[in-house]
Length: 111
Image (cartoon, rainbow, N blue to C red; front, side):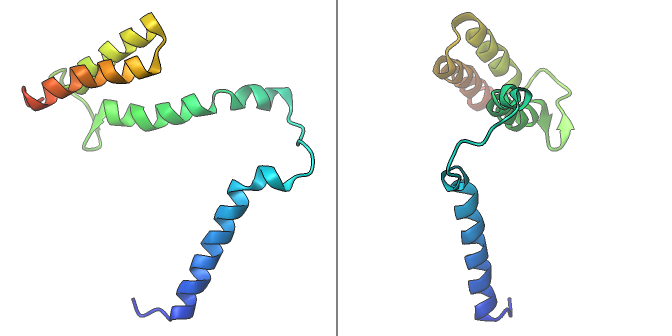
């Protein structure tokens, strides 16, 4: 780390500019930007796709490989949480049920 101090300041300033511009982009335009209908419909699914992209590898993989056994606390937790969601359509309940199944299996049984 023998970088000059001014290079560090330039890096911090550049990251600050990028962060401010990307987070305030919707405030910069004077009017609403028109979006095609197909893009507007597709953007409705972006949060769900992001959650699935984060959760799926955590649930289905261990140490970079697919889970090979059902003796893993994540499998029954996901099944219980999914069943709860499809029954009640409650996100908070889904999280609570999933953790209520996962924690005892993971801590007490060592799964």
